[in-house]
Image (cartoon, rainbow, N blue to C red):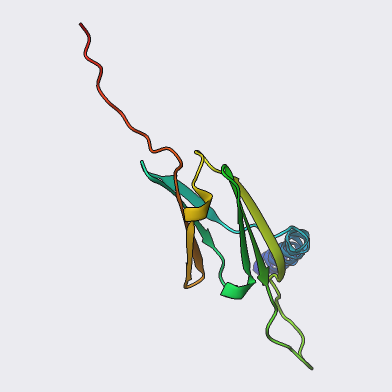
Length: 142
């Protein structure tokens, strides 16, 4: 008898935990679904260039806009929902659609007219030649 009672208590606790976990997951999903999209971005430089690599999976090349000034770059992309789902109920819907925007301050001034960009496999790579290349030289101490 004690075993059945302990099993019932254990099953009740387990059921409550599963139920509360689903409630928490639903609340987090509702909260994050309202947050604006923000694409992941890496910015790195060498002596001659600044390179900005941005993940834009699911975006078409024609839906990307890049605005550059001599010390900032702004990327705007449109994620379009392509699939129409009729007579179906979503069990889970996490993919987001809409417009994303990301502005980055550049670590050096650039030559705007020599900037280049390529988009391949959902990754946008923008190469920005620096206006002034860093040069170093050794000064002799006398």
